[in-house]
Image 1 (tube, rainbow, N blue to C red):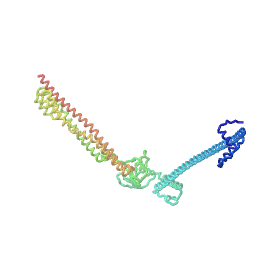
Image 2 (image 1 turned 90 degrees about the horizontal axis):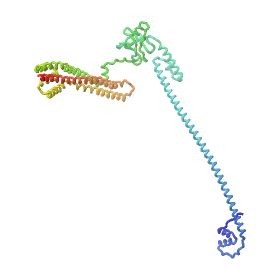
Image 3 (image 1 turned 120 degrees about the horizontal axis):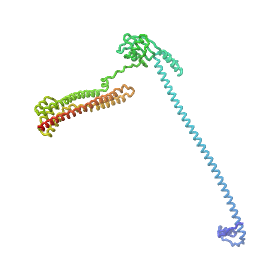
Image 4 (image 1 turned 180 degrees about the horizontal axis):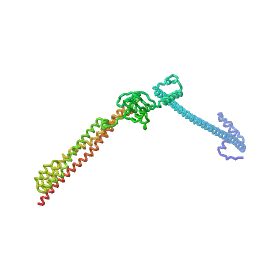
Length: 471
């Protein structure tokens, strides 16, 4: 038997469980004075046994409740885990269904896009087919095929319409690919219309035969033909004589509805005219520079030709001491060299430094004559490319104005501005390069003449000084 450790609190509890104590407690509740109670003797061992039995029952009851709570907690945890598992499984199934639906939606979207592309392709094919029918009808219309204008043809399925059009086209190709000769009119190179025989090689070439003129024919527009220059003259002559030409010369063409113009050969005046007013200004400056260069060459040649002759004749007279004769000899010659040497002879008696200053002054005085037109030539050489650049800018502005107004569909509309832009630059450089080169060469020639004049004058002075030293 389990033994308990007694405490004061436990003893008090036992006392309250005794009968006398219960009567006192009841009287206290009713508010009456307690009657004298005679204490009943209690066996402590029985009281302890009763209390211990009560505690054991209470303990057993609490243990039963604890086991029940534990069982209930275990069942709750099990139910919660099972419910959570079911919910998680349900969530997983829902996610799988959502992913499956999303994939199906994407596949449906792809199918829809593919269907739209196929629909667009069908529409494009339909449009192309209708355009093909229109082009075929337009191409075959001149041949007067009545079936292509009938209601049965227009209401036929597309496959039958294609078969009909191809059948007529193949028949026409077979017929038109043959060599045939007809009578008709064509134009000569001078524009005269003549009647004659026309030999057609399919629909790609033709020859005209007439007493007024024969030759290979080219389209002149609106189904008419014209003789193309001097092309295939030998071939035409051989065919007209019924012979087989060794070399078959012809003018191939695709259609007779559009006229083909002969390309004119380029000329200098034509190229300049394509550059506009600025090109003519550059050409005028170039001609003016050419005239100045010729005049400058003439002046410099005259100035350099008599230098050695003047120095030789005057120097010989100075060595002889004939100063007056030397001055008279200088007067016989004309030009810058004669004047510089004469200034040196007139001042031979002066000292050396003063005499050299006089010669330098005379050469500077003659430089304006030797440098004549040199500055103008170099200015023209510098201005010509700038004018070409101005023409380029003007042409590009014209081209952009045309593009803004008419677009870029017709290249012929742009050719005028492009011609100005390119031709003016070409002409400007063509004028500037030789002008600059010749201008610098002539400037060097002038400087060489100045050096020769100075050397000649100094030679005369040295000869005079030698004469004085000898004397």
